[in-house]
Image (tube, rainbow, N blue to C red; front, side, top):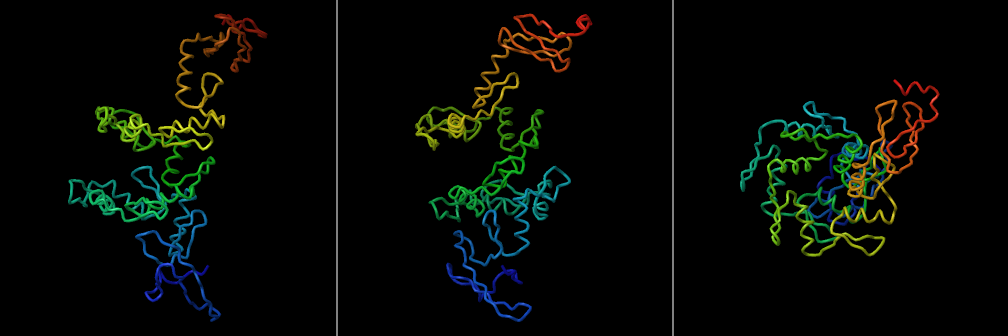
Length: 352
């Protein structure tokens, strides 16, 4: 592929949609050659310009090589530009510059339809579309339309099944870079969103917003059928299906359908045998978190058997269980309420 020496095609090089773009250049040996490139069909609402630099991971194309270089960092998870005022990092310096405006108090961009103000003009532009209902970008595979090009690009991956953003710590892949960023917090344990009314922190801003409503007692989403109210819009959506009977999530391994995605995920484990929720008090594992929570209640009423040589305690439901105290290298039998130590060379230890 030849790197063009210009930022974009000259006006005389722009052709109608669907026609090939032909560019003639001279190389160092003064040999003439012709570069032919079939113009990709653009998204609706975009301009058909030559984008010769393509990403092999996700298929995106760029007009300039440095733009492709920056884009490749999103796949590698590289974020070299860090904010000195918070813990966030960014792929591009320009994104960091825009982020720094978040720390300023000024919101110079005001909506003429409502009282909202924004720190960035781009956010105001997106917000205005909520008033006008404008959805400029349409999917050519279905009838959905979107307010901006990035949302359309993300949506198209639901048709192609493409998941170009991979976690380097496990085998999971994602359609969106933001989802990968959020997923990485499950490995790092990072919870950057803190409640200013209590000491709780969360991995996602949406979880913090929902939590704050527990302090305010706010339930802004009401069911028109039964008047129940909910803190989250998706809880209302899920509840609404109890009235309509809708079950939009179907299992691809049998003919069962479910009202919400979490129930489908739990059901699929009956096919795969996966049990990702282990009990930290015994060796059992479970298909979903609710079954694990129910199981852990059975441990609450169990008698605790203490080791006589240390302060560690053990819980076993059987009448006769072989226990191993790693701390003192003892093997014990728990018979009802009684622990009888075995293989103790120095029995005087028990008197200490």
